[in-house]
Length: 475
Image 1 (cartoon, rainbow, N blue to C red):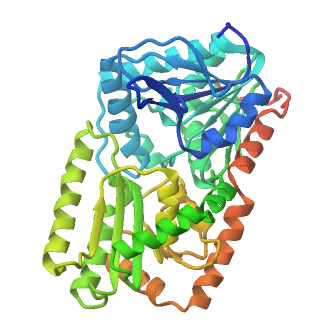
Image 2 (image 1 turned 60 degrees about the vertical axis):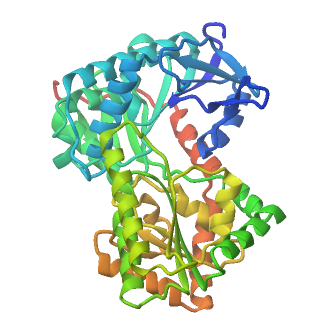
């Protein structure tokens, strides 16, 4: 791709494509599933956009290429950088710290050095690609230093940043040895977006306390006259696309087939998550196991299908979690299963979107109980697929989606007895009660989809804000 040809640039840790092996043994690129690509693709096409990201293979340098009309700009990562920047600082330092320290974060200086180095590489690539006065949208926790690095290289750019995961309160964030550098990195953006208002408030408060800039509500005033706006933009899904998929004869038939393969139980409960310690899998499965063992549910009447998509399998915490879940499922099934009747079906695999839609259609109760989640789009996908207004959603209070899906059966995932009670309430509720709840949730999801999320963010980002005339405190 020729230097300086993009009016709109997306910077994310990964490119929106996966490399797959074709039937003839060759390799090809396939667009990754996900709402972000769906939302930003039309914007990129209209504006001659480019997407900058890692292509997924260590120690391999690729030239920019075009896939399905989208300009993709690969960023090289060495094997050591994958270990230190990605698996290390991003996923063993920031991830647990930002998720309420569900697991203890690790702080290593060499991981931080790799994080700085890789963030600079992304920023330098964007500086070469972007046209004068282009709009650049940086995505997520792996790239929090990019906004300021990029602004130093290209002060003409309009820069936005969106954090897809939670942003922690000061009491947790200040554990980070490089807390000020992260805050200053984000302040290179004109607009910093978060999933929840509380996260935006945490950020503004920390900037005031730790960096010393003057703030007012959601506005931060910098010494150079710039202002930075910090606001919540709850992300969503391609709701219409999921409903359309759920209505297809193939998905409807597959949903019936899934239930039949499970013995056509009276109640099918479903969990779909990445295999991650933040998702509350242990507590959820334990609650269901106790409902079976104490006789509240019978093995002939209720089954729990848990899909756990493989995730970060080289990180030690994830290896431990996988072993723990395997043992827990084995113990539950060993204690109460009968020949031909297994209460928990555990699937450690990833599935295409059509299969997910079939699972959503098959399930009577969706159980989404993370210990902490920025949003959790699985909950919204389930609601989008329930076009008949049937089904029930048991949802953690600590998922970002809980603030929007208020009609869900909300639970504290740390409270096993409370979770058992709420699962039973969802199972035993009248069809009329569940339809009332589902209609309210569907209205919220269908009216606030991924396209509206992207449009709202980009509209605010491109608004011209005049330099402020305030006299900030010296930093």
